[in-house]
Each structure stands twice: as structure tokens, then as C-alpha cells.
Amino acid sequence: MLAFLENSNCSGKCKHLVAWSDSCAGQNKNFVIVCLWQLLILRGYEIIDHKFPEPGHTFLDSDRDFGHVEQSVKRHENIYSVDQYQEIMMNSVRKPTVSVTKMADKFYNVQRLPDKLGLQNANINTDGQKMPFRDGIRWMRTVKFGEYMYKTSLTEEEPWKTVKLSISSSEPDTDLTDLLKPADMTKPINSKKLADTRKQLCFIPSTYK
Image (cartoon, rainbow, N blue to C red; front, side, top):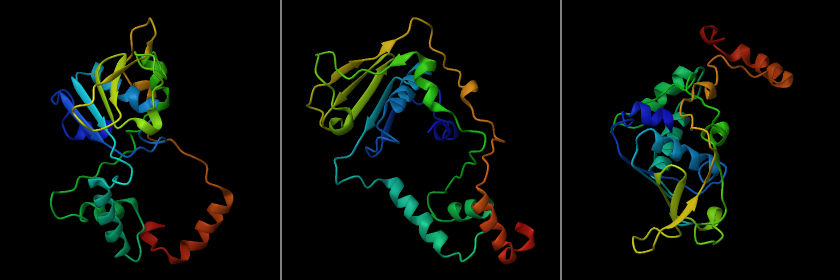
């Protein structure tokens, strides 16, 4: 998301960000994402809305894009390199023009973001009610560092409820340099996986070996 905002020239220019996603707790509806919105508020955004479609209605525009990419990949019998994947993605949709970002030097360890910003989660709102974070929230809004508001529906009529986050006394650090994972980060390959890959080399053109 940070790479997308950077590439789309939103940083410092857009004041109101609206994000839509499904309610997958591991990816989208969790405290790390809450802290990411807090970071963007510190960086100049005035309003950040995060909306979650009703269960059963979670097909988003991005799913359509992924479908186009998947169909394009299936039309290629053999793909040997990351660059080929990039070209396939860029040609998967005629309009609008597709942009593909290489992420090698753009991965952050955002799991450390709560500590870096000095924030702790809360499970009750300012009315003393238990917050239905995972199953009940349909709309989150962040306008001020250290708190966010939520609704259990996507209607304008429902009043906002507020959640105050515990803030440490130290100044929040918005510089993510120390959270950036090195571009040359390597992970050992399982020996069996390596052996299987070597068996396939006879089918790979020499250019890509």
C-alpha cells in the first residue's frame, strides 16, 4: 500500500484516502493496518476511510484485475523469468494502462509499526462497549493520531463510535528506514526443492538457466 501511494503521487497531495478491502484478519482487518492509517495521518492525510463490504458482497475491482492476469498467464505455456511475468501483467488489460512495480527494495517489517509509533490496541470504545472489531466493523475512519472511529454499517445515518489507543510518552517515529528489509535478503531453499528444480533444468532454455 505504501508503494502504491508513492507511485500514484498521492503522498502529500491527497488529503482524503478511501480504502476498500475484504475483512481477512490476516491481511486487512488487524491492528497493524490500524497503525498504518495512524502513520499516514502523521504524514499529512486528513481523513482515511477504510471500508469493508458486507459478507457475500466482497468482490472488488482488484479481483477483476487479478482475473485478467490469471487468464493471461494461462495463455502462456512456459514462463521462465520474473520479467516475463511483468510483461504479461502489463499486457493483461488494454485500458487503463497497467503499471507494475518491482518490490525488491520496498518491503517493510510493518509488524514493528505499533512499537515504533508507541501505540497499543484497545478492545473497548469510549462508551465502555466491547468493540466488534473482527466481525462487526464495516467502516473505520481515522482523522486524529491516537484514535479512530468505526461503524457497524456503511450508512451515513449510523453515529460514529470512537476507540482511543494507548500512546507512549515518547514522540512517534514516522521514519521507516529501519523497518525496510534489505533488497538482497535471501532465504535458504529447501534441499528437496533445490533437487527438484535441478531436475527441471533440462527443460529450461540456456538463457534462463
